[in-house]
Amino acid sequence: MAPMDLLAPPTKLPEDPAAAQLAEGGDPVQVASQHPSSSLAWATLAEEALGRGFTVEGYAYARTGYHRGLDSLRRAGWRGTGPVPWSHEPNRGFLRALFALSLAAAAIGETDEAQRCAKFVDDCDPTAADHLK
Image (cartoon, rainbow, N blue to C red; front, side):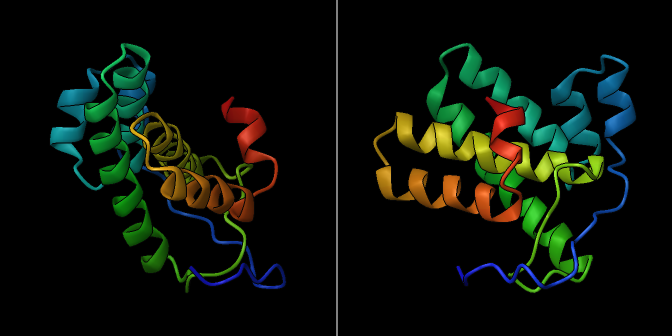
């Protein structure tokens, strides 16, 4: 991953189509099935799995959300550098998936990946991890 260019304009993702369904209490499995490109749906699944002690499942969900988020960021003009602000709510699905991936990677002993993901969260927005802890 390239170093972040803090002078680059912030990337702001469009509204996540799954956000409303999840906010209304929709089942994350069904929401992810209906909106497989939603980082937020995958991040929600990852957080729930990790919270129940299902580390491998949480890792898989988080990795899916992370990759779906990278796809969305690239479509929004992100070129691998620059801020992805937590303050822009549609960015939170990607940031949550990335944070969950760092936790899950640490839990399965993937220390290098855990550190890279934690740094990536911080590079995207230094305030994001505080919201996610």
